[in-house]
Image (cartoon, rainbow, N blue to C red; front, side, top):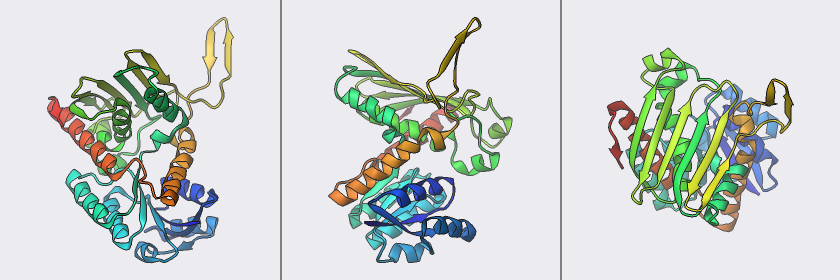
Length: 328
């Protein structure tokens, strides 16, 4: 039974707390949050104790730490866990500064602890199956990867101001998927963006509508489109074209019921947001982490995956700002 402490009792922390508490191989032993009421409520729901992060990381009944706190705390918490010899699962990103991530990973390597980064979309059943089919040669040699990711509505501007921007906050998931599916590292990044959904986002220095093109040394291309507005639900699609054919994964809906009459065909909208769309991915993500700890395997996505996705996000931000491609 793996004793887990959760740091961060917000929206994503509540998802991981429920999954850890329900897992037969895990025990949620402590919850930490600067908001003590939030920590107490979550701890009480699952029979855990409330603790400071320092005490929880040092506790002998804690084998692993799940970091779901604000981004600017992630790297320091990872380093504290590494020095205490505790395994770490950390929500993306490790940090908004690639240099800080590199220093953090040096501490992790020196300590030899397992570190997994929460790119949960790799564990979505449809996306995971798509990757399996690619690895089996279903599309032949990969040539084009197309990733579409659109949120149903924008977050508050107060969140935008501390998010690091769309490329580092929202698109970083898609940048990780692009690396995962291309099979080699991108070396060139093109990006464009605009504030078409909410002018206040533009006034805050960010974009809410963007497209990125990645190119590898071999010439494989990935295109990613993001928007903070989709009136038809949470739009999450992938298409991979190769020398032998095409593999794609479509949106998920509440049911597959379809109606038709003289006015046309009607289907249900896509699931409303990530809580519903990726519920199974979060469960599979935790399962992978715990299996790796039990078997002594390195979990994936790794800290290096987190760094490489951040480097691409930085490059996309710069390419959008300057209007010029960025070499990686």
